[in-house]
Amino acid sequence: MTQEVLTVEGMSCNHCKNAVESAVKALPGITTAEVDLAAKSLRVEFDETKVSLSAIKKAVEEEGFTVK
Image 1 (cartoon, helix red, strand yellow):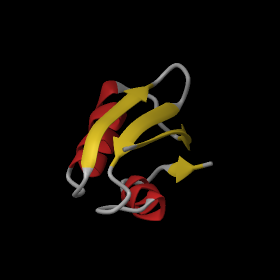
Image 2: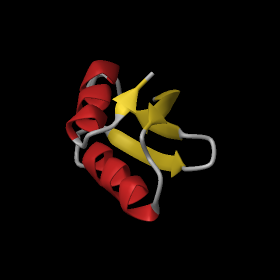
Image 3: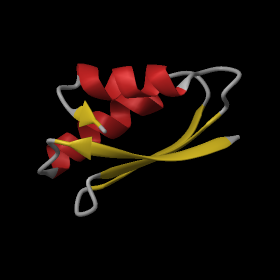
Image 4: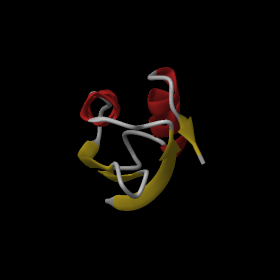
């Protein structure tokens, strides 16, 4: 398992938090996806043999947020 913490710009409410978490959790190989609104971060744990970091970033960006 791989763990990453990504900075996500544009999140401001629980709806944003839920949208990002749901989009990432829908990907194969995701174990954990937790947003911290105050820190503007997404902590994700995943199986890199099933999903890539770029696919995770793309899922967040498709929800309308920017990954730094």
